[in-house]
Amino acid sequence: MEPGRKRIKYWQWLPILVFWLLVWQLAYTLIGSDLLLASPLQVGSRLLVLVGEGHFWLTAGLSILRITAGFLLGVAIGVIFAVLTARIRLMWLLFRPVIVAIRATPIASFIILALVWMTKARVVIFIVLLMVVPIVWANVVEGIRKTDPQLLEMAQIFGLTSSQVLRLIYLPSVSPFFLAAVTTALGLGWKAGIAAEVLSTPQPSLGSELYNAKIYLETPNLLAYTLVIIVLSLILEKLLLWVLNRAESYFKTHGRLGDAA
Amino acid sequence: MSIRIEKISKAYGELKVIDDLTLQLPSNGLVSLSGPSGCGKTTLLRLLAGLEQPDSGLIKGIEKRIISMVFQEDRLLPWLSAADNVAAVLSSKRREALNWLERVCLPEEFAGYYPAQLSGGMKRRVALARALARPGELMLLDEPFTGMDTDLKENLFPLLWETATRRLVVLVTHDLTDIEALAGQAYRAEGPPLRLREA
Ligand SMILES: Nc1ncnc2c1ncn2[C@@H]1O[C@H](COP(=O)(O)OP(=O)(O)OP(=O)(O)O)[C@@H](O)[C@H]1O
Ligand SMILES: [Mg+2]
Image 1: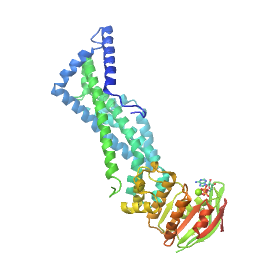
Image 2 (image 1 turned 30 degrees about the vertical axis):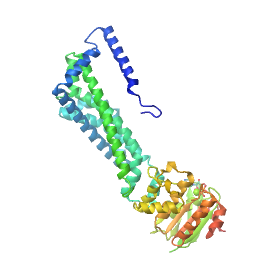
Image 3 (image 1 turned 90 degrees about the horizontal axis):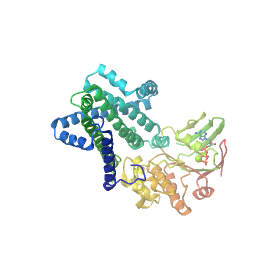
Image 4 (image 1 turned 90 degrees about the vertical axis):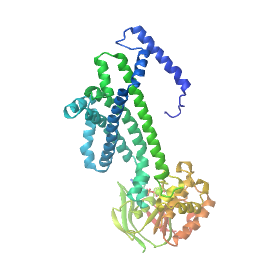
């Protein structure tokens, strides 16, 4: 939430939601073609049917699993690379161009390349990872670089051990950068993962459902699955924030000093 | 063992901050320096701390000394409370940390405050408590009394005298009255390049 903004209450967003549903309905009536745009009612009833099917949950579950796997791997690799490149100059010189190149390459190129290289499910994991690594890497490197040199000098004079320096100086300095990175990376990784699923169509997956909806011109299905993808993305983001908050408060109470009150 | 500074020089670019300085410091006791801003006092303390290396000359007798320091800046960890900042250098003895905060006259209720919630003089006291808490042989204090009133300083002086019986305390201050009140070996500084005159 942006600073200074109050949390929006449900009775404030409910009318807004109704307004946009009405706009949607109006657009549907004006266009007058079920092929181009489905009505809110059509999409809603399609959704109701979907959530009643076991297949739907399997589809969503597997997509979440693939994308989460790519995300976690990407975060781990990003952090490891950040530590290595921030500490070892040769690693920095060697890998910076690689990361810059990955960032500049359209994700579609990678998806098509990956399709040649590996199995469908792996394509998705790989693409999400490729999306996440540069973001996490860049932010964590920045966090490490911006760690206050005066505090590090203090730690040197006071003879803090390397594990204390890590726990008491580096971790708290880097954590805001890390937090910003993982929340951004999750959103982008999720979208890239779905795009990879559309192109690689692993079975079953949300992406291949989108693909089928397009092939068979099932606009209500297309919109219903799109809604599902949006909602899942929001839920995953909330879940991630919750986990990070828990981790932070655990760190605050247990991570610091052995016998802190 | 005493510390001998032998013909050290230190320049930053064109500026010779320290030029051929020789000085003998006792193994314990209180040595204070005062002098105008920019004359090279902090540079001398940083050389003694081993944070800077002299361009030429030698400092003998600091090799294996355990050093504690109040920097010119507070350098407290912003994410730790006052007590935890002190405890961090004590391998976590919180009770001892609280004790040190009390000795530098920080009221008990502020022990749990974070640096951002403390006043300038309070942060200074936490930094001083941290330096006192670390058992060492050499204590370097760079303007430790910034932001403190006379009463408060008078309460802190005995703490420094007591510490100075066990280790060497080198103190830098702007305030000449501090030097007079503290007694001990005192130098008037001028520069750059830094020159020291016994006062
Ligand atoms: N890292 C540095 N790089 C370049 N010049 C420096 C550096 N550190 C100090 N100086 C210069 O050295 C001179 C002495 O600085 P120093 O900090 O030792 O003064 P000081 O006596 O402690 O002053 P003050 O009382 O204002 O703290 C100044 O002119 C300063 O600009
Ligand atoms: Mg200074």
